[in-house]
Image 1 (cartoon, helix red, strand yellow):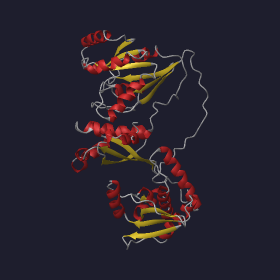
Image 2 (cartoon, helix red, strand yellow):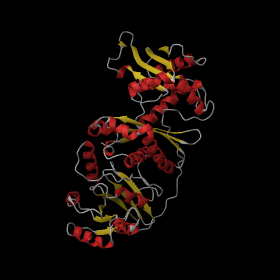
Image 3 (cartoon, helix red, strand yellow):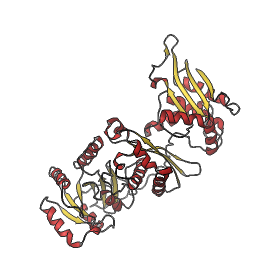
Length: 476
């Protein structure tokens, strides 16, 4: 295994033994994966140079610790000498300056950090990645395996969270005694549907007593079907907070409506939420037409009771009663938590007898990464003008617990146009700073610990109309 080491700049001053550490790590890793007769080029550099490469090739305006460029991913074909079975793997760039910073931060030696970054870069060249959680965990296992082969213990100078890899959360598994439920215990799934901006997410959050679904006065805030669980001594209700049903104008809109309508066939009861301050219109008629095709009990929930006079409620009830045979009509205020117990009691009547599907302390099936991404998106919705909200997506790139116990989160806000990027960043970064400060408060409340939130903004033109991009964001 040939390992070619170069310096950028050429007069870069390296710690003693740095080149030998990197060369040995690459030379050992290649043969572990069947590449004994191959070549890899490794450039040792500083933060300034790797910052330029990040900006040029990844549209990331900051230095990172390592970059990998596989020949298999390049426009030119992979170079292989068939006679000698010789394989060109690609290039790895390592910032020794960044490695030193991280070694000090994690409390271990520079030797270990350089070896790890080399192994990490090699695994990327060999086809490993960490975009998805399953891939991330697999790659971390491979990194640990390679480090052991290098003879570098994980506990060389104390505990360590491996950088650039999501550490699998270790959970102590205990067997709890089986709780005996009442004979008439009920459980079931409840769809929450309605036009955009009628307060579905606010209702869900108020019912379960915790902020899971994001809220905004902008329409189409919820994009995916979010499962939330309400557990009481005599019933467990699994609420499915759906995207608002509306006429789609792009592939994202089509996905949202499909997710909402598909939910109607999978539940035991349906809550149709309407806004007491809005008149009956085409949107409500569109939803009622779809409800006609279901055989599920439908409860009409008249929300925002706090914004109308009491005398205005009866005409609303009368109007909807004439249009559909609802099992019940319940006026509420999700924001003020008015009559929520009455709503729960009404829903319970239409659920079958059944077990507790989920543990008592479980309130959602959403992974922390997705909830955090949605909390950030909520702050963008609250703070930006009308032309931005529907054009944004948020992806959490990294979540790491630091040695001091604080949570580190790195996220990217994606927009469709350069002008939108400017709006979100704001003058001298003021808007992005405000978004970050507000999101951090919610994240710290969710995680129960101090959080360092690192947010970046990137342009991804017309992402809402790209099927591949929507799949990458988890919408298809």
